[in-house]
Amino acid sequence: MTHSLALEWIDRGVRVNAICPSLFDTPLVRANDAQTSITSEFIMVRTPIGRRGQPYEVVGPAIFLASEASSMVTGHLLRSMGDI
Image (cartoon, rainbow, N blue to C red; front, top):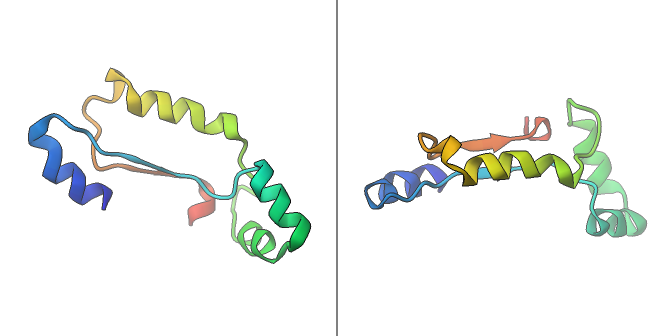
């Protein structure tokens, strides 16, 4: 969808990119772990980096993609190592 929208909207000056994080350490994830850890365990076993992401780790990429520094970037999926 990101790539398709990027192609469709490029002539309007709209850039479309996506940040695709893996499992991040958030209150919602911790609350889910308190009920069951099956999903978290399933994801963590398949996460090469071996840890949950921290919310602050998405800030830099988001700022980059929202800034003029990424003016030539469109249709890009920025994946974390949990998405392999």
